Length: 639
Image (tube, rainbow, N blue to C red):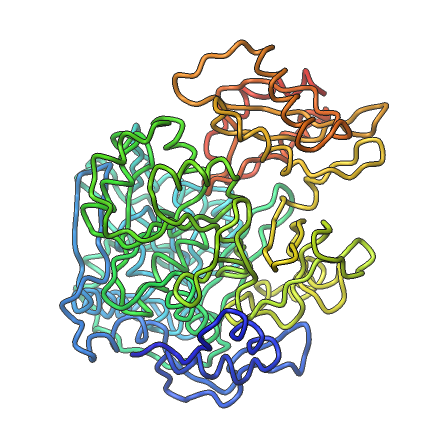
């Protein structure tokens, strides 16, 4: 496989992708093997439901595995499994992966799973999670991965919406300080759901969960993975239409049903392969590490699928950035496995900085083969960017994207046309995304003016087809705010050089005495303070001004500051950088900030508590509920 013939400069590539998407993306589609080559890139006949490569036919599993073996890469590592919590390390070659995927696809087929059927996967970070996903893709089935450790009611909601024929799970997940048995959660979810599958297939981790036995669940057969594979015939790849769904991935809000984002097969394969070459600069044979979880979109895109689509090697890591065993965990993995790049969340980098502010652990490892640190998941604040840049001596590249888009909206294209990095900006709109900034009435704003970040339709291939069996919600959630545009829900601006600045969700813009102010801007200022590891600024109700900004900061390890003196310093910094109009006066030092498991700070939940709302819904994705409980008294006091 060779790279698709993309124009050699970013400006030419982006221009062509917008003015002639058929030419641009049909070229990119040559990087994928098709059973029926597409002749059209985008079908615009039913907006806002755009379809990519409508006459194409392919199999994603074949593109990830078989074709690389046919090209002579069978002995190359496809996945490297590194479990910091168990000490297990395993290399799975492309040939070995094909055997495992064919075998498990056969086991799923024996349970009646075929093209278009759904399979819910509820797994920890072990290689068999990726095998299960690729096995579904091999059959043309649709997988829906639920983050391992989600509570039973959340799992039940997803079972009811997806209506799977089979659930694939494991005996449990392993954290640095505890083991989490999955059987009780799966069994309870099956009791709560009305759309129970006929079978549960279990990847055993008996050495860590020796006492676990299959639950008794009426109407559901529980089977060991190895037993299911032993009696099944291996399955070959099933060709599917490019627009057939590859997966459903649910996004969790604080209220209402989760939204089941649907990804296609064709656009997904083309976009992800293109991104590995051009955004991330990763080539066949490179070792790539995305330190996420398969339960999130980053794990889907950049642990399981994208690296294999280009014939690279992907690291599956079971561990944390700190505590497994120390703040050098990331650097150990990069050094040991010779990864060319790391992709992680800014919150993980901040956690490392908090524990090792001088970066002493970095010096213990050989990172000479690493060319870039990529970040995504939330805004990479300038202070964290600067710390990582200084300590690593490598380019630190922010990415901005969403579960809905599946791959970056904005980035620095390191593999196509590397650009100057500006702190606080994910650089420029990626080819395929016609990014604009609109005011509340839908008028386009000039360079530097802050407003709503939107994408002119059609969006790039690989973005969401829609929401699972809910076209009405798809339109109302994303397409009805501004006619002809996808609403990202984020606010920000584009400067005169075309650099994008994402300042946070539009509901994080607060109104202080008639002035609209970005809490993200205030956070960026506060994060510059040498004692501050993390910060969240929220707007709380104020009888006089409508809202007022309140800050909560976590100090770096070893930092001890007089609270009043620190508050005074931070207030002065905000006043000097943003102005007195910010009226920033309140700041509290706390032990931790509540986050989702993917690293996003729960600012909306904090704001609701501070505003005195009763029975505030806590997102099911919260990493540690105790952090929120400990913070709640401070929030109520401010309110």
